[in-house]
Length: 483
Image (cartoon, rainbow, N blue to C red; front, side, top):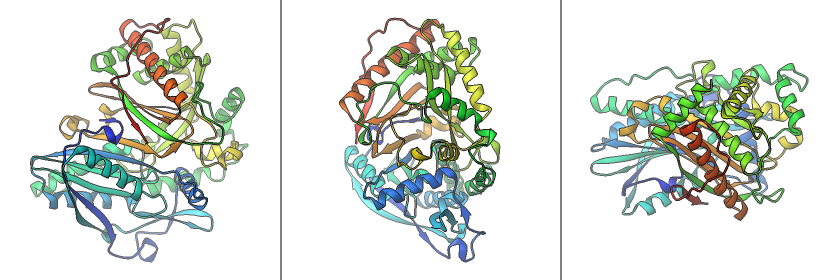
């Protein structure tokens, strides 16, 4: 499973069917499953940005989507049952959000009060027309301020079908996507065989959000749990770590986005990279992060890497198989000075990550509000921020079926004032997806950075050392979508 632009999806034509949610009963506060609950810190900030943008006619839109294959002639009744089972299983998918006395409230509909209706959209005779229709539908219909907060459908053909779901970020994160695929594929197989659906327990994200608020809403800027952030800010000079290369961004502006993805290493090269990392006392993701830091320095960045890194919060409770925004964002820093050997840089990364883990509990949004209130009032991060994300998709639920299910994740954003990059490892190797501001300078900068990064990764995986001169590499393998 990997992440790349929807426009690059190999999607055969067929008949498009959508399943649309409807209410069959009362809202949760009118006899539902329990009292109204408060949104998480991530959800509250996301919703607030949407509210303010709507009020000032300056909207930012985004979505996360996943597609996967169902082989053979589609059993539409079984798929509809599987989709309904999926929605009823995850409470956050049944939520509406609204302000109550300043707080963002989650109001879940009861599972039995959710229904689905199938709509035959029509036949599409070209992949390009189909991809365009889906992208336009996701953009038009995924609205943070309106229920429902996701779409479901399938492209039906004689021998196979492509199922798709697109979500607002308020109900899920990137690591929810494997759970989407595994839940629906497992339920579909059970319904087609006339069996009961058996899935692992999945706790409600609403319970996670309530627990998080109970623990951290009352903390102040003087709390000792913020010491890690404060020391980072003191060394960094500000709350956010800046992306260290020129993107041609004017202060206060956002830009349409470029969405690019492509391979960095094949499976053999990635295995060799992991072997080099383990020999240096680290893990594969540490080696990728080290390579990114080295590449940034070789392109003109500093000898100390400072960036933000998302960390999963699924391990603390019964959340591993849940839908929700289980992500904390943490600062990481380490030396990547010129002249240091690969083993030295890996030791620095390992130490930086250990420091991060010691303070990982305090939610990023709460820290942001307490320690950088002026920046918190903005609808975007104040300038291009250094951001690194890594996921090994071979370890996620259902990975043993990915060859036949062919799942893909897709992320889209309408505008940005910086750049974000996600790295995924799967059975085929290491891949990179970047979304960044569409400026001439940003295109040049990101092209050069990818070239350097691939050379650094190849040298580390092949020889266990950092290359000094930067070689040549063409970017033909990368696919680009201009928004």
